[in-house]
View: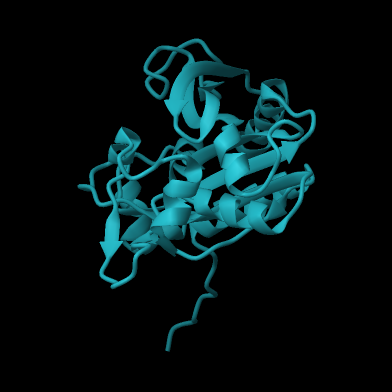
Length: 245
């Protein structure tokens, strides 16, 4: 018999551990929640009511259950933020990494299941400047290089104002390359200040408290860091990929 080699962690697991270490060093707790969620926590409590057009942004796997509050596979880890805020008082500083599900066709940049990172800070003084500083430190530690952060106006129903977060390309240092499509910037995540209605839904007074939230795909962060060109490679079980980590 040949010598048996030791097993090791999958690159997605390694990435999640690195992310948890970085944010723990900034005082964030790690929060978890169920992958099978209710319509209330996945949509309603996040300021996305039944007739809201923003629901079209998420292609949802619905579960067959004879309940008034319909069940589904969570489309993001934002429900974890709602559940946490229901049971904890500010100040709050958490990240919520975990698997999410979207009913969509797969290709090099899309999977029906993938891992997402979300973050939440709620206190009396935090603002977009705080968000920018937190993300700049995270990008520096995760990618191993200094990075500028750019915020662009966007729209998400659970934050106002909403922004897209860009990072200066860590490969070409902003000069322009194929990874950043010659722009010098890489779009990383969506973010913004928590919508007052979301705070009201969990019993937090928006006149006293405010906060920011952000969300990114862990798969995408890993692909950018290591130059992986097809997200499906992370889910084939091919040891030629896994053994490189």
